[in-house]
Length: 91
Image 1 (cartoon, rainbow, N blue to C red):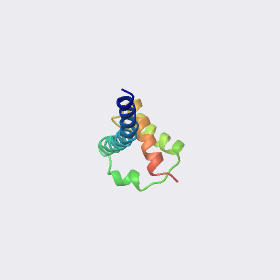
Image 2: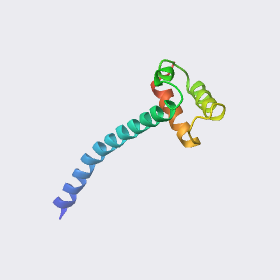
Image 3: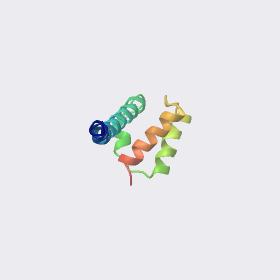
Image 4: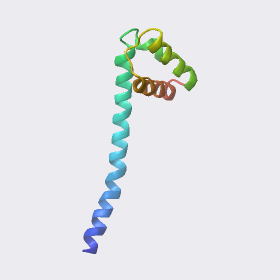
């Protein structure tokens, strides 16, 4: 019985990190896809990805696109897009 419990715990501790990494990669891909889909509705993706900005500057840009120019994003999507841009296109 002890061997079974140790075996199950060992497998759990081995699988958990692998699943976590796969989940994080999927989330990052989903956020990139969200960014590309929503932002390309109005302009070429290259327009955004050619710039380097701080987190605050990206937040200002995304909110300006949403509020002033009618970008088709809700608050949650705007936050995700801002985080993606700040992580990948930072000054």
